[in-house]
Amino acid sequence: MRVDSLVIRTDKLTQRIDTNQYGDAHAVLGITSDSQSQEKATSKRESHVLSSRPSHVHAVEGLRYEKAHPDDKRVLRLVSLARSKKLRSQQGKILLEGRRLISDALDAGASPLAVFFSTEERLHKLPVNRLTHASLVKVKLDDVQIWPDLDMPLDMIAIFRRPDVSKLSFSEEKYGKALPLTLICDNLRDPGNLGATLRCAAAAGCHSVLLSSGCVDIWEPKVLRAAMGAHFRLPIIPNLSWTDLQNHLPSNTTVHVADNSSNIPVTKPELLGTSRRRKKPGEYGWVNSRQMSLKECGEDEDEEDKAGGSKQTYLVLETQPYHTSWMGNHTAVVIGGETHGLSREALQLAEETGGRRLLISMVRGVDSLNAAMAASVLLFEGRRQLSAK
Image 1 (cartoon, rainbow, N blue to C red):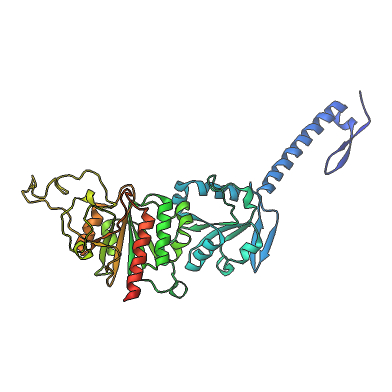
Image 2: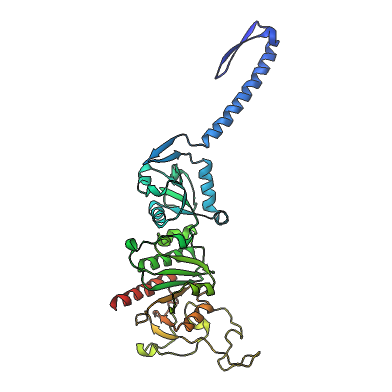
C-alpha cells in the first residue's frame, strides 16, 4: 500500500511528509515511532529532573526560599542524615527539630546550613537575620517520615554544622548569671537520660557540664529532644578524658559524688558527716561493680601488695546527707550512669579535692534513682544552699 502523504501529529508540531521521499507508509511509521519514543523518553527525563527541583522561588523578609516535594533530593538527603549517626559524624552536621530549639541555636551563634519548614508563619518566628547563608526549603513535613519512631508531627527541622562549644555565646542577660556549680556526667549512656540530665543542669543554672568519654554523643537526636535546648544555654563539653576533664574545672574546685548507698546506719546527721569507714568502689551507690584487681584496690585493707609489699587502701570519702551544707566557692557534682555507675577515676578525683559522698537516702526496696532525678535533687539543693548564704 502506498499513500501520497502522511500527516504525523506530535505534542509539539504537525508535519506532512512526502512518501515519495521517505518510502512506503510502514517505513514512515517506523521512523515516526522511533522519533516519538525518543521524544517521550526526553520528556520523561525532563519531567523527572523538574520534579526534583523546586517549582517556585519565593521571598520572605528579604530571604529567598524554595518549594520542594517530599521526594526532592534534598529532602531525601535530610532523611538519610537523620537516620545515620555515621553520616552525621563524617559530615560534621547535626539536626535540630522545632522552632524553639532552632531559634536557641541561632541565638547562641550556631551555623545553619539548611532549614526545612512547613509554613511561612513558622519561618517568620525565627531570627531571619541569622539565616542569610542558609538554604531555606518549604516542604510538607507531614508527608516526610524522618524518624520512624517519632509520632509527633514536625513543623520545622534544620541542618547545622556541628557546633564548637568554645565559639557559642551564652547570654547572661537572657539566662541569668551561672552558679559556681559544675555537673560531671560519668558514663551516662542512655540518650533520653542524658538529655534529661542536661535539662536539669540548665534549669538549675549550672556553670557548665563536663562529660567523660564513656557518655553517649550529646548531639544524638534523642539527647537533643530530651534536653529541650540545654545545649545552647550553658557550655556542655563532651568526650573528655579524666585528665582533660580536670583542666576544665576552675581552680580549687571541690568534687562531690552522688550516692544512694544505704548501708550506713542513719542516726544523727553529724555522725554521717564524719564517717571515715574505708569502702570498696562497689559499695558506693551508682558505682561500677566490676571486679577490681588487687593492684587497683585489694581484697582486704590489711592485705599487702604482692609486687611492692605496700598496703592497699580503699578510697576514703566522708559521707553526709545531701541536704546538709556542701556548696563551696566552686563545686562539682558527679552523676554516674545507672548501668555502670561511677568510675574509679571519679572517686579518686573526689578524694583528691576533699569531696564527699552526698547521700540521697531512700526507703527500703528501692535500689536507685534515675540519674536525671539524682542530678535534679543535688543541683537544686546546691542552688538552695547558695541562695541561703
